[in-house]
Length: 143
Image (tube, rainbow, N blue to C red; front, top):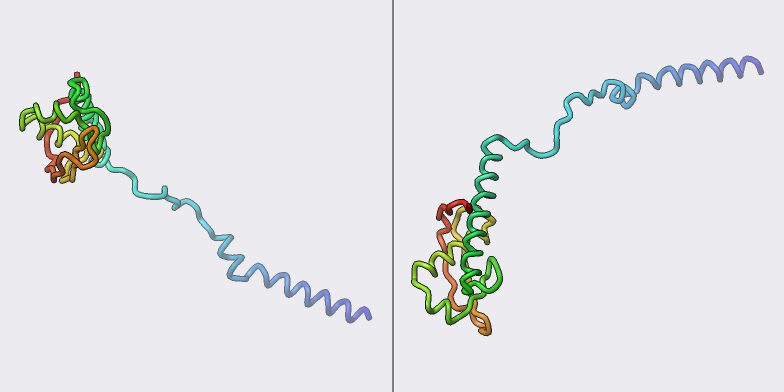
């Protein structure tokens, strides 16, 4: 009987001492968290500068939108402006082009690049006009 207990104890000791050599145990022992990096790319200085330029451009075109709102032409909307039809019809072609540029800038959140812009009129279901806008204008910063 004592011999059986000794044999069981010896087997148990051998089994337990072998557990420390198991690959899973070694992996946890040697795990090193020192190489942990942040999720996603770290913004470069150039990327941060681009965001700053985009935000400044968005502020500038928003200020220009406010100008047309104060004139009573731009009634509502940002990316799909609704205008007063009589005021729109009375505007010069250059002023209309500028309104398209403002709406394109708003649509792109200040980024440059071609945008499709639709201008609608209050009280009309159909758009006044839709066009592709280059969206390259550099807007003066608001004072």
